[in-house]
Length: 269
Image 1 (cartoon, one colour):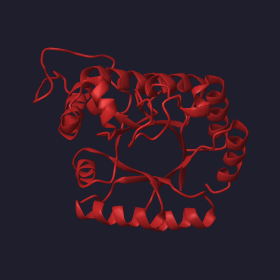
Image 2: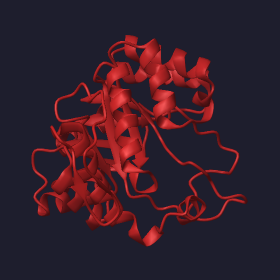
Image 3: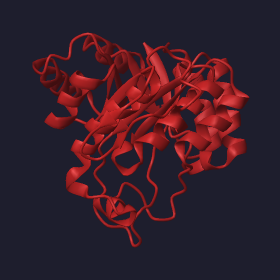
């Protein structure tokens, strides 16, 4: 079982010194990957469905991961998840290609359509169009990464007679991992992605989603899950029996507790 760590750019890890120490220790212990979250803004005062209070610190994923790329050598660096419907896909393609280059091909591009309507409103992006934008933007980004003469004509983005260099290190661009358990997210995974990511799911919930994913034709995908429970050998075995390839553990919210948790989880790999 691959084991990753969620929260490397937020909370205690919004402090770059803390993030560096945790990242380097995780790499030394053999962790597979480090994952950020992403919200550009949070509603103040807190309102549903916000995942955190408004003063919760969250670094921008590409900034955080570019810094960590410079202080690590092997551990993979994942966005968990980047809300691409909120972004200009031409700029985002450049941003993520650059991150793949500076990390030496270690980027895992987790994406999602998003759910925080207050954030979309602040960014001036139509919340109801988020799914359609997400699907179109994936195709546009891949054209920029892979086509000799990139061009694209869609509902939300069009371009022609351009180049954006350098291209990503990874052949075809960084692997795309779709987050979310809605039917739209599962279909998006099968249609566009190399992997699926389920967040804060127990074993029974994971089993139910994976059954639905298979119903959409989702065989052969890499499956990553952030468990809703603390990892131990029995828990790891239960997820492995379902066909999960990677567990991305939530980070405790002190550096001392995180370092201790890293030692415990390393014994499970």
